[in-house]
Length: 100
Length: 447
Ligand code: HEM
Image (cartoon, rainbow over all chains, first blue to last red):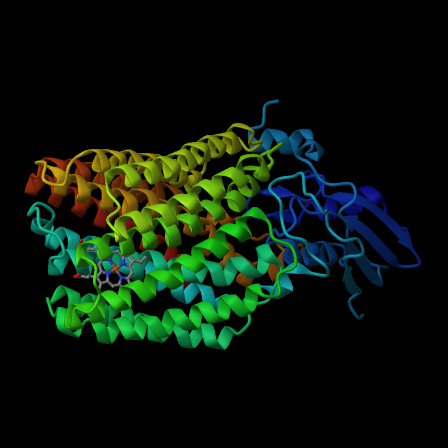
């Protein structure tokens, strides 16, 4: 088992190039599970029809591939529950200049 | 050691009635695998940027035409069509090739057709501008015919593409209405050109020209700009909560009905009352849209107003001013002193102040994005890759924007007062501003 914090840390290298925020701080990662060398990630996107989907999903897969012992990474794109900006972390909000 | 396998799946279907941000289309499977290859939209965008500089350059060189109080003169016609077709329509077509697959979740029917169409269209625009600019109205029909063919290919490609769309967000309806207008515009343009030789249309050529120009600017380019902003603005600004249908439906109905009404009233010379009524319908649509646009910005979660948004805010202001100038035009009798100046100021405001600024603003997002996905996305997660805004110098881009904006204000004042040096200065500034934007963006593509 790889430390979950380490996985999350690796995911911070994947970001939305427009907002300049990583997928973790954006609140797009809904869950990470591990079993027998397979890492499964559930993630969402800020909006359906966002042209960045493919890059971000692939980026997440690649970011987790760096760990020794990982044989397979499964990235699932889910839409439940629907993402809202309220999922953005405190750091993320600060970076966006979102005071509220 | 073999690298791990990466599998990407999309089990659930995306939301039916999206609550956030604007309604998107819904994906099944992976959306962006539907996107067109980057070279298709980029060729239109790069060429369109060069035409923008060309159009403003021509307007500067022949600024005299903007104070002469005469219409349909060779250089005015050439500058108008270089701007409308070479710059704005060129970029609009490229943007649709990029935008339709991702927003409406359908692949482009034929990318090869799209690439072939580009060359025909380019030849048509250059030919039309040349024949118009050299005053050879008898032969304008040839390049006009070429444009019918090229735009016909574009529309065929779009119709075949859109036929597969399953769910229609608001933006989709606007795109559909805009494409319908484009089909009518090019037909009207061709009939106009043939009519210059044969004179077979039992309507005043001037009435026909005015109807044609309004359908083009308001129906084709205008509806497209409004529709696209409903997708892009909430997406980039993270507007929440924002429901595109709340006012969007009424805005769509008002603007489309208004365009049809203005077209018919101008074409058939139905008189000032009918025209005024139709213009008020357009005005109501514009007013509501400006309000809704302000709402998108008010509820945004991303504080800074970036370069694209600055262009758009100026563009929406340009739209409101265009509508007011149009109202002033309807209310002044055609014989009144200053009527023709008002008309020119109105046309410049619509094409450059509203549509031009809006188009450039969107390009500052789309071009870096296309280049980024192509060049940097494959490396994300493995190494540090730049953000979109790192792909071009922000300060220079702002300088270009300010130059263009200041240039347009000055040119407008010059046209309204009929003062040649002011018109020249304004257009020269606008040329410089556009040249900066073009250089900036083209360097992103070729860097
Ligand atoms: C977005 C697209 C277009 C816009 C905004 C536009 C706008 C205009 C405007 C404003 C005029 C009057 C110019 C003046 O007063 O000096 C005009 C005239 C004309 N347009 Fe267009 N146009 C567009 C597309 C086309 C196309 C595609 C064609 C040809 C296929 C075309 C053919 C003509 C012709 C032949 C005239 C002049 C008629 C005459 O001299 O009597 N236009 N257009």
